[in-house]
Length: 327
Image (tube, rainbow, N blue to C red; front, top):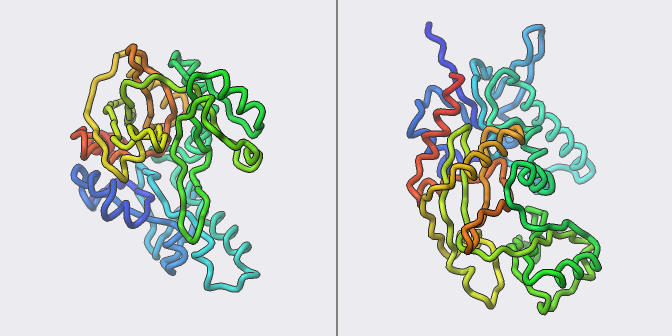
């Protein structure tokens, strides 16, 4: 009987049914792919078991061993939210939360010989924005002068020294008001902008010298393949809201066009992903009005489906090639 080597994708139901997985499946056989979302699998009763013996770890989900896994794409698993445990005794919520998270995390030890896109430890390390800027600068990228601070005086002095400053939140979690989640977009200010810094100790922020923007770039690196696109969000031009963040275009419309990078910039992008121990990276850069390229950040597990669809770039093919390289 022929053994089929398989790829495991760890992601949620939306991504499985309507997001990145359908794009990938245009280039892979259904027999090659297994999709699992660990937290719902546990809570919905499918069961997740790790059997350890002299041969290593075998992961069993819904009574089916996950065997012949040669590649793992750790895309977007559902995080365990407190609301998922509302049905149990409140005294047990903290215990159950820790137990489930630790049980889920064993997943990342179960396939040591597989190609991980990307290794979880590397992803967690690469989320560190200060580390990203440091490593990018070491590779020769231009990096805007930046401070990460909870000190109101340091923030005020930084803003006063720069013609314009971009303020960013380091948190992906926004405040909840009336059961609605709010998100902070990066905002452009000047020394004249009225800002209350008094609560900065409760909400540390990133302050970065503003670049005179020609256009934004979203650069997707898959293994050693690279795809660049210019990104414009019309809503950024509305000076009344002061947003300097093309993500606002997710709500108001984005213009994304494939483009070429100078060879040196492209090589540095690939080198940065490798330096951070990743197999994938979604890099945000800026081309200024003098033609210089500025590194802003890298998302070690960022979205690329919208770039493929709007810019007509074959990113899913590259991802399929990467995952199949071990199969």
